[in-house]
Image (cartoon, rainbow, N blue to C red; front, top):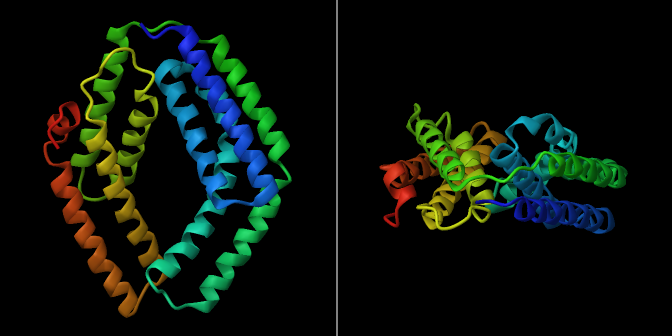
Length: 244
C-alpha cells in the first residue's frame, strides 16, 4: 500500500527543492540550478500522472515556468554543444549567448511568483491524495512499460524523445512504489542516456545545416541510432528483469 503520508512527503520535498533551485538561480544564474529545477518539475508532473491522474490542470499551472526555464536551458545547451562538437560559428555563439542573458534576466524577475505557484499546486495535489493499493501501482508501471515499448517500436527514430520522457517518468516515481517492483532501473537509466546522447547530436546537427561539420554529426547520429536500436531490442524483457 502506498500511503498518503509517503505521497505527501514526496510532494513536500518537491516543493522545497523547486523553491531552493529558484532562489539559487535568482542569485547566481547557475545553469545547474536551472537544470535541477526542471528535473523537479518533471518529478512533480510524473507524480501527478501516477497518483492523481485527474489533477492535470493543477500541474499545468507550472507549464509557463517549465517552458521559460526550458528556453534558457536550450540556449545554454546550444553553447555547450557548439564547444563539444567544435562548431566554429561566432555569429551563432554570440546569438545564443545574448538569448541566454536576456531570458535569464527575465526569468529571475518572476522567481518569487513561480515559487508561490508551486506552493499552490502542491496544496491542490495534497488535497486529492488517496492510498494506493499495490496492485494498482504494479498495473500502472506495467502499463507505462508497454506504452514505452510501443514508442520504441515506432518507425525509427520519430518517437525516441517521447520514449525517453516515459522512461524518465518511470524512474522519477519508482522510489515511491511499495515493496520491490520487477523493474531494471539500471537498464532504463542507461537506455535514456543513450537517447539523450542521440538527441544532443541531432540538436548539434541542426545548428550547422550544411558543410563538413554537418556531415560529421550525421554520421555520429547514425551511430547513436544503431546503439539505441541494439539497446532497445527486447525492451519489455530487459526492463522487467535484471537482464540488460
